[in-house]
Length: 345
Image (cartoon, rainbow, N blue to C red; front, side):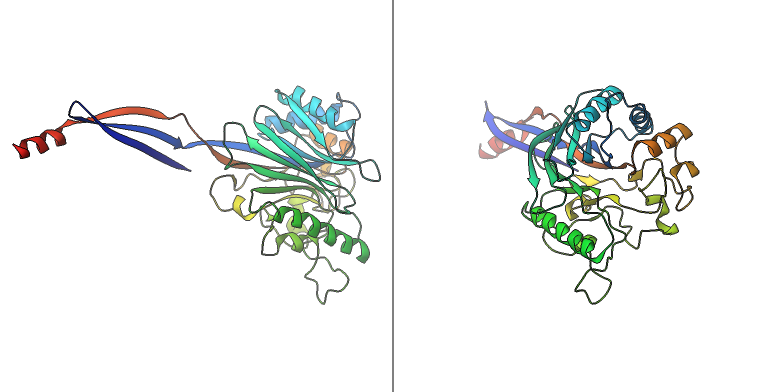
C-alpha cells in the first residue's frame, strides 16, 4: 500500500497559498474467496447440512465474498445463493455457465455488497465442463484491484487418455488467462489431478500434466497459492490439504486455488499468507478414512460435510488497498515572499 500527495500553489495578496490534496491508499480491505464442488446441492434452499456448514464457516472467519461452484445446476446455484444470503446476511447473487453433457454447470455466488461483477465469459473450447470466468471489482476500488476468477472443473479419471485430456483442458484455460494480459487471476475448482506430475502420453519422464501446464513460466502462468506441490494422492505429508472424499475416503487433493504471479508479489491485490484452509480438515483424520475420523470441526459440522458433498470447500483471503477520501487544506507561505520584497528595496 502507498500514500500519495498532490499539491498546487498560487499567489493571493502577496501571500503564497499552497493547496494540498492528500489521496491515501492506506486503508486495507480483504476479500474471502472460496471454491467447492457441490455435488449438485442443495436440492432445496433450506438444506440443513448446507446451513450447518455455512454457519460454521461464518463463525470461524470464513464468510466468503465469492464462491466458485462446480457441479452446480440451474436449481442448486440460485438455491445456494439464497442459503448463503440467509446464513451470512446480505444479498448473494448466482451466475452459471451453460450445462455440460451431464447437466452440470460451473458458476459463482457472490456478495453484491462487497463485489461488483463486471462481466462473465464462458471458456469452452472442447472442455468436458465449460469454465465460467468472472470479472470482479471490490466495491470502493477503481480498477487496480480487479480480478478474474475461473470456476474450473477438469475431466476426472486416471487413464492415460484422460490425463492427456486433462492436460489439454489446462492448456485451453491457460490460453484464456494469457489473453488477459497480466491481470489478477484466481483459478478455483476441482482439478481432479492426483499430483503435480501426471504421466501423459508422449512424455519421456514423469514431469508433465495439467498442473505443470498452468505452472510453467510464461504468460498465463498460475501456481498453487500455498506452493505445496508434490504427489498429493494418498500422502500423509499432504493429508491436511485433502478435499475428496469426506464421506468415504479422504486421500485426494482435487480442489485448490491457483493464482497469477501478481497476486503473490505483495503489491495491490494479494494473497494473504496463512489464510488458506480446507473447511473441516486440519490433518487429524485417518488417511483414507472419512472426515469424521478427525477433529477439524465440531462433530455436527463434520457429519454435514460428509453428507452434503464428496468434496470439501477451500477458502483463502486476498487483501487490497481502498482509496480514502481526499483531504484538502491550505498553507500560507508569506514569509518567503516578504523576504524577497525586502531584498529588492
